[in-house]
Length: 111
Image (cartoon, rainbow, N blue to C red; front, side, top):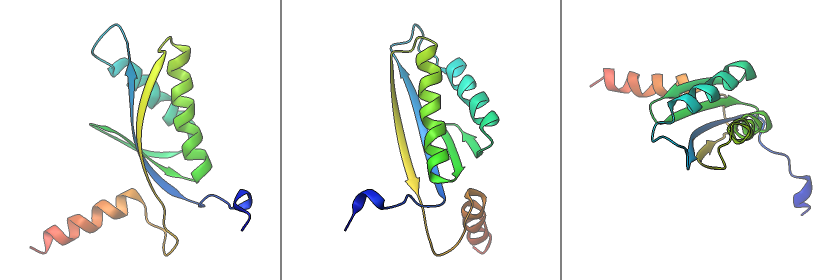
């Protein structure tokens, strides 16, 4: 098999938590606000939550935005960034992050 020719999935959901390391303050809210501005301008569908952000869209674009977030903070002088990323893809149906949450809410409402 020619692994080099394998394409990436067409669509994904990626939950990521970007952690600037070695900043002058324990607070990173200003950096996260800058990342949120970048995401807003990217056109990628997203949901921010208390421990990160979920991006939804084409595999390559979603990962590009995460990389751009790293570059943005590096350009601001942050020399080290650690990011946790959890990515999901599926081929059996199209499912948004809202669909996933709504399904669980639906099940909870039946109790």
